Image 1 (cartoon, rainbow, N blue to C red):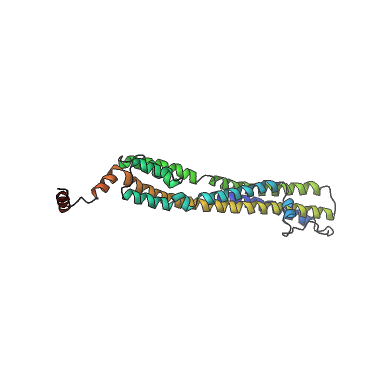
Image 2: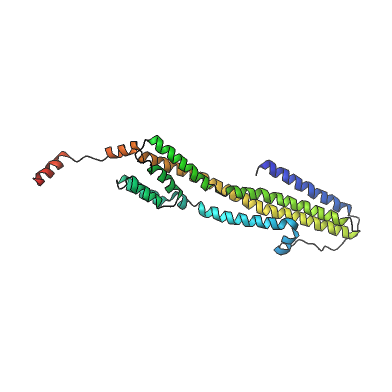
Length: 271
């Protein structure tokens, strides 16, 4: 959520609360009434019901935040996305010459991870020019980035919706209070106004209590995705160079040829 939107919503809430304060001030000359609607933090159920009609949608938003927060926490683990063990074994087998195109494809298919999907796109073009392999790797990487960012927009949306629901609860509290206060006289008017103010403030607090964790989770997971994408790109670039025609030619050229003396002795032994 942008800072400008937060500022506008905060200003609106302050304006509404100022209106309540003004109304309460008008009741200062009325006889004091006992406080019957005290907000107690030790009774969460009563506090929840005091938030008014906005409480149930906010409860649903909190459940959505918890569900997708845990889902992204599991899905964005570094061990699951980058699979360091898979990468080490793949590089070791490739450098040892234990892979050809078919065996490399089967090895990648056996590992359900984003980095394995990117490697699979590279080994399918085994021995092709490096430009073709890099293009295929970039396309596969883009698909995996979309999967990594999955459900992050939901957390951002919940943060926006919860803030608006809190503001809506504030408006409901004002409407409820002003509808009832016109039918009352004396100290009862002040009591009804205090109840409306409590409902408005509790609804605003509940909205912020849901919006702040949702926005924090969205920021945290977005940062994690950016770091994972950088590492994914580095690993993908390395494998594209290794399985391309240029990389395979370089690897073959780096294998030392048998020495002349060794081949002479081998021939003599055969003779």
